[in-house]
Image (cartoon, rainbow, N blue to C red):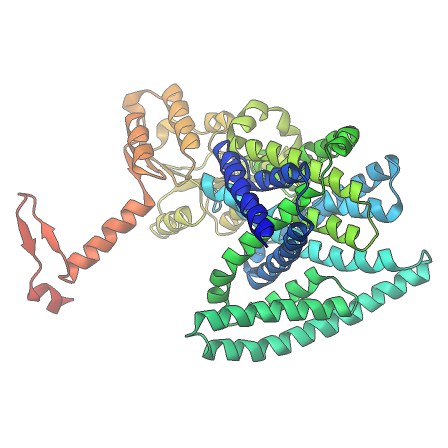
Length: 565
């Protein structure tokens, strides 16, 4: 018992240290946890410690899938429309075909090649959402598309776990495979029906037990584990049962409370999963598999972005949006490792294959983390060659009636903030032109007879087409600081200071706002600051706080103000 406690404590200390180091060098902490396992594998740890770690790793996988089902938000897919489904499914299909062919060339069997091919298609939702959140790009067009296609990938991952499980256990005949797929469908439908019926009953109980937080937590854990065990008994995997258990509670009124309580458990146990992955790694095997790791890593780092660039280019998206979206799928995810680990446990995949795919995960996670964080810089370096992925007729299709249009107001960006501004100006019959790189927004504006142009704020060629000397006001609702800086620089080069239009911009913080004003913007608004000022105005209006007069004297809003309100 003392040995178990000491070794488990050492494991946690190593996870803390290496996770912190990974974060300091701007890498996902997951890499640190994998290296913890690799370090532990170099020393002989007690067998009981390894058994505990492996048990915890199984719980981590179950809780991860449970949370995925619990937090599944189909609205996020619907918000970005067909592009999320098209890119999500299209990228999975194309990458799977290429990956399967490459695996077969390397000498893997059919079933093992299927596992490898599917594993190469999935990207990490957890890591991408975290990286985009740190960049402040979750609400950007490419950020919303990325989240949508990642949700599609997560759903495909769960389906792949089911199908590969049954196909791998079937005999080689076509009839056996068809029979297995039919069995999957029947059992799947019955399990979904059972999960939702029992989930409704459990949801009612959880609402009544909501005052006891520990009772809610233990009940949800019991539900996730018991239902997962039941699906295993029926021949499906533990992960599928956990996912269905989560979906069954996703519509419950206490789903948000459940998610808040389960997240710390999920995060802790999934750390154990990555540590156990590291335990199974062998430096000698990784050295032997290096050529395969490099080739498969290049397929993911370069191939997946190119696939998305091609698909989104055909759909009419600007090459910048396509490129930044493509970078978000330039790594393999925790689901890829879970999929291969499941294949190993079922005896369908060799442990050396798990080691190889883990090597690919390490390389792609490191590479993609830096690519995503420096995406704008990389795009500017290669933006001209990327024109091949953009429909050449888009500019002509959307700008054919702009040459003779009167546009004293130009609005860059018509999503959310820009949408409201455009709506007001249009109702006031103010002639304007809207510039956006979302083809869906442009088409919608043109249907409403609003002059709109498909383009990018940082595109110098686009700005050159516009007669800026006749423009009175330029409004940029684009949140990207670098883009707004480029716009100011281009305007400096195009028109003299005396003929320069009024420029109104938005910024993410006060520091950015000050820099943009120094560079020539007439007004720069920070949404959070504006919201705070508006709330203070409301509080003053209701007499809840004091107001300061222009002379600096403090005045209190009296009863008259409150009565008038």
